[in-house]
Image (cartoon, rainbow, N blue to C red; front, side):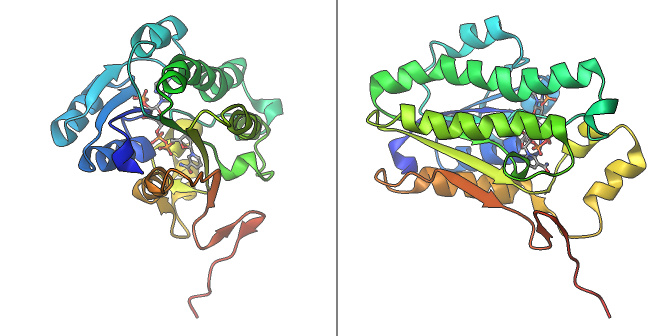
Length: 244
Ligand SMILES: NC(=O)c1ccc[n+]([C@@H]2O[C@H](COP(=O)([O-])OP(=O)(O)OC[C@H]3O[C@@H](n4cnc5c(N)ncnc54)[C@H](OP(=O)(O)O)[C@@H]3O)[C@@H](O)[C@H]2O)c1
């Protein structure tokens, strides 16, 4: 349960799902370490929530181990991530591929590796990986799907590796969420906007609520995977109720 935990580390805390998660964890009394690159955003979040901030690029592996290796973290929310290459892999740039895999997969592995030994030693902890429905179903993005699919099988295997350690593990697979994700993913502003319109998307706070649900279950319960989508979005397509 959340009351079993005292500290949390949330990456990608400067907007969207991460900022909402930091806010809710601080409200529940945890000491939260919030990580992102945009320092002004983090400063504003710290003012409103009391979280501790780390201005850091999660792809900076040396900084990751130096900053987090010695922290006593009970809850790790690996949320920093992005989607590029939505115009097919054939049109993705080298930078799109490297940035997506380095952030979504490699950095997530290093942060987990930095924090996990302490959890195992204390026999207390909960790791939450921000995955996607793109990890579970084809959604017309080979690059993003590859990065989130990697998180899915990492999660399933890590869950097995953690058996007997008392450390819990949860993968969260959201559908479309109204955040800055599409501003980063898509260069054309009209197409960005079109991803946020036409039906009612999830909000960052909805996903944060799912994370807190998994954290707050009694210790004997491990919520392994949460798949959640907007009511009007199902894998395979979008069906919007006619307005008559
Ligand atoms: N929005 C969706 O529809 C959706 C659906 C399924 C899954 N997800 C996943 O949910 C997670 C959160 O996304 P979101 O929707 O909340 O998007 P967002 O609003 O764009 O937030 C992304 C966060 O990641 C941080 N970040 C990105 N690259 C980073 C880096 N190299 N180092 C440190 N921080 C970095 C950003 O902070 P800085 O730019 O300040 O560093 C930002 O705080 C992602 O893993 C995403 O793949 C999103």
